[in-house]
Image (cartoon, rainbow over all chains, first blue to last red; front, side, top):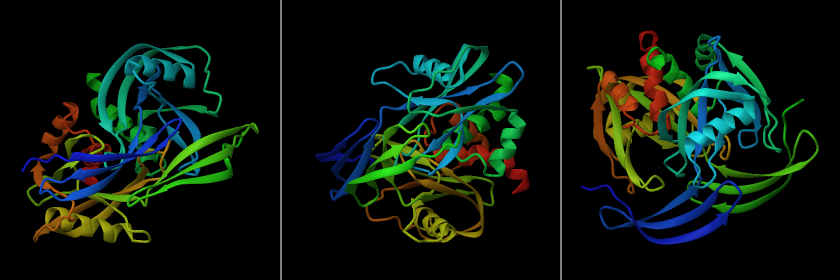
Length: 179
Length: 179
């Protein structure tokens, strides 16, 4: 049976600064209908940025939805139409002050395909050159660096709680010899 | 500087079947204000379920927000107040027909802390006993099984595109000798 849901009608609920919300009536493979609540997001980038000393850069920022400050790899949202690699270099520089001499796309994934179309483009960066950080005006960031082994321990202790960060670090640990 | 955002006012935009949406006006650490768009989600569970032959169970289902069918580890959303481990065993049984003789919590993470409070509780299950699958009435699932090595290759080829699934598999590959 082909797994496809045809849109029968769409109701736009909200248009925001970061996300929009729409509700769709869809036709299921067996002909019945169902409702799908869909958060529209422009997509984001995140970067596993490795310094010459082998440490990985993280930023700590308060996340209102989580109601706590989280340690995350540098990341940001795409402007509509923006090239993800350009965005990744920009966000890395703005958030950490480091310019990437080398950058490479690792993979792209859906963060929450059950209720959002957000795609996350994950990059690896090295040959970092230090400049000055310029976070967005409503961002309050602290920059940290840790060894990959430290970060694995922090994942296993559940001190790192952000999905893209866990993916980036586990991927790097698995594949760093071929990057 | 303490990284905390105090809520000044809340506007409720939408109450849905799966998600709600609210918009908050918050006070930043420097005293200025900003807007935060927050998708409320009851939280979810997902399960790395390993058969006695070493294969990992996956389900394929059409995800309307992604507009494609995705291969994912079995997962589901929490009922409000439900114990995540009870939910994980229930979802595994409903989606795949397998009952877990052994289940263990691996970690909990935020899927998208930038715009949602969704927490994902990740479990490991083994000693599986086959019964009959009973998916929800609006779920059309196909059950698959792959070796861990196959799944790593599929991640590297970007054929697996779901964040919780990538985390579950990479975590399992890293830690399986101590599970």
